[in-house]
Length: 135
Image 1 (cartoon, rainbow, N blue to C red):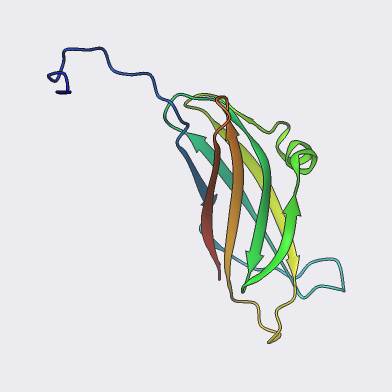
Image 2 (image 1 turned 180 degrees about the vertical axis):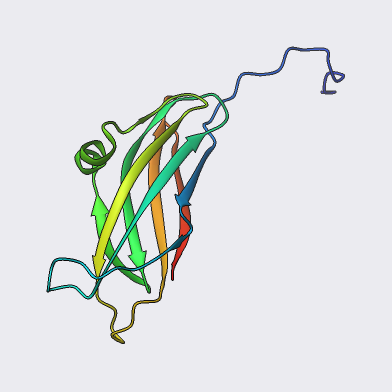
């Protein structure tokens, strides 16, 4: 069937959330932690933003450093850090994160990926990730 001409119908409602994750800062300085079991510590804020107009929630997130999964936060963990796991339609959730780590080579520089698992209000499961670099 032919498609309607442009402008003939109202803009359709979005059917799926659009989420992005951003690390702030994206270049994170490593510091020596108070815990002697770990050589280094980094802290950053993960922002999960929704832009299509469909609210949702962060189910869990995982942090991978130098190809090793080192931190998994479930819903309760996200709520404990951010105060909520809900992301409003066209809103954002700031999740402050701290990671204590040791690298296999004893160094401190690495790339870190934070992956977010998100379910929107229509039941769609979305996964996105954000990168940061330790400096």
